[in-house]
Image (tube, rainbow, N blue to C red):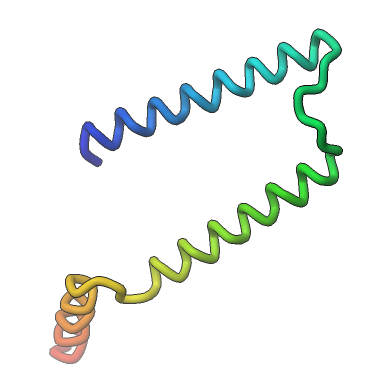
Length: 82
């Protein structure tokens, strides 16, 4: 992992933490900043998780780039030598 990726990940985590803390503070004060029911939130997050995992799985297990195709050819050559 490069330092740039590390910094980006840290900033994203910080932003999410600030949003969650702000949301929890508002809930504690009696104001519901999200006009959704728990069921709607659950369904929305489940849908997002499904789409993200499907895209990740598709990307991870298919040789999309030229480099990935070349690596697959090399892997098959090495397997056939044994």
